[in-house]
Length: 51
Picture 1 (cartoon, rainbow, N blue to C red):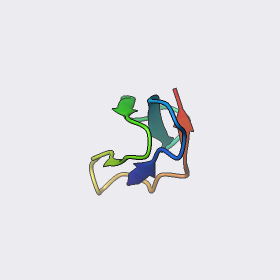
Picture 2 (picture 1 turned 60 degrees about the horizontal axis):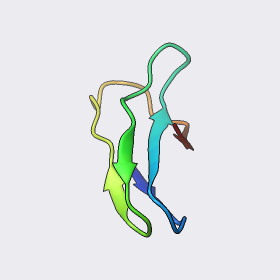
Picture 3 (picture 1 turned 30 degrees about the vertical axis):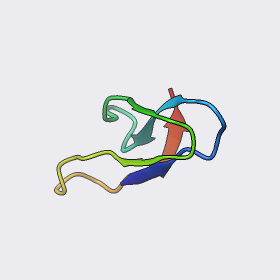
Picture 4 (picture 1 turned 90 degrees about the horizontal axis):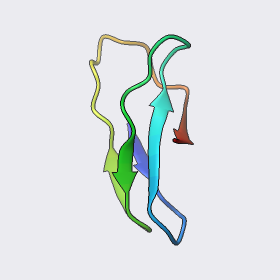
């Protein structure tokens, strides 16, 4: 899943996979888009959120 930082500052973000486990937060610089890699066998991510 990719997360785009539309803010003017650096953020830390991750995605919600399920109530018990989410991937580690990643640092995303202003205006950048980065991907969170996870096992494709897992459930789809529901949404992204700032850590």
